[in-house]
Amino acid sequence: MAESAEKLEDAIVRSAEQVSGQIHAAKEAISGVIFGQDRVVENTLVTILSGGHALLIGVPGLAKTKLVETLGITLGLDAKRVQFTPDLMPSDILGAEVLDESTVGKRSFRFIAGPVFAQLLMADEINRASPRTQSALLQAMQEQHITVAGARHDLPKPFHVLATQNPLEQEGTYPLPEAQLDRFLMEIDVDYPDRDAERRILFETTGAEESAARGAMTADALIAAQRLVRRLPVGDSVVEAILSLVRSARPGPEAGDAGKLIAWGPGPRASQSLMLAVRARALLDGRLAPSIDDVLDLAEPVLKHRMALTFPARAEGRTIPDVIRQLKSRIG
Image (cartoon, rainbow, N blue to C red):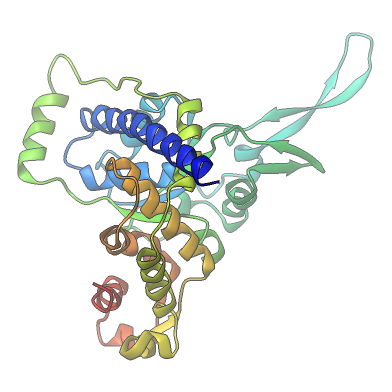
C-alpha cells in the first residue's frame, strides 16, 4: 500500500515538473507580446489552469483583447471574440436553428453553431448587452453545454470565457447580476503599465516588425495540466487559511469587526475557486504544493466580486479591497 502511494507521488512529481516547464514557456511567450502586465498574465493563466473563467476590468487600450488573442495562440486554443452591444441577441452567441430544404423538397431544421463553440471565448464589454443575452452565457459557463430548441449541444473542451468590462462609462450598461459574477473564478484588474513597460511598448509595437505570439502548449496539454492541478496536495494549514478567509468575508461573528461592514459575502464556490487557484499558482511557479502566501495573494481577485458592503460602510468611504486586506491581516 505504501509502495503504491509512493509510486503515485513520484508520478505526480514527474508530471508536475513536465507541466510546470510547459506553463513557464507559455508565460514567457505571452510576456514577449504583452508588456507591463505580469500580474494580469499570471492571474489569467491561474484562472485557465483552474478550469475557470475570468472577468478583466480595465479602461480601453490596455491590451485586454490582445491578451486573449495571444492566449489562444500560445495555449493552442480555438479563440473567438464577441463584441457585446445592447442589440445583441442570445442566438448571436449560442447559435440558432435554420430551416433547410433539400433538392427533393424535404424540409428539416439544422443547427448553426454560434461563437460560444470555442475553447476560449472573449466576451468584450459584457455589461453592454441586455440581461437576457448575458444570461445566455450562464448555462454555458457553468454546465459546459447549451440547449437550443430542446436539444443539448456540448461545448468544446477546454472551455473558458474571458470577459472584459470598462469601469468608466456606466451609462447604457447592464451591471452583471450576482449569479453571473459568481461564475467568474477571478475578477482581474488591468492597470496602466509603468514607465519602463510603456517605453518598451512604444518601441516594440510601432516599428516595422511587431512581436508575434507563438505556440507553447496544445489544448490536450492544457487539459492534462488542469487535471494535475486537482491532484496537487494541499496542506492543512492552507485549507484552514482558505476556510478562515472565506468564512470571515461573510456577515456574522466570524468576520469580527469587519462583520458590520459586509452586506453579503462569498459562498462555498469561492472556497472551491480559491482552493483550485492556489494549486494552479503553485504549479505555475514550479512548486508541488501551495502555501499560505498563495492564499493571501489570490484572496482579492477571487473574493472581491463575490461581496458587497453595507450602505453605512460605503458612506464611510470603505471599499471591498480595504475590507479584504483587513481580513487577510488576521491570517498572515
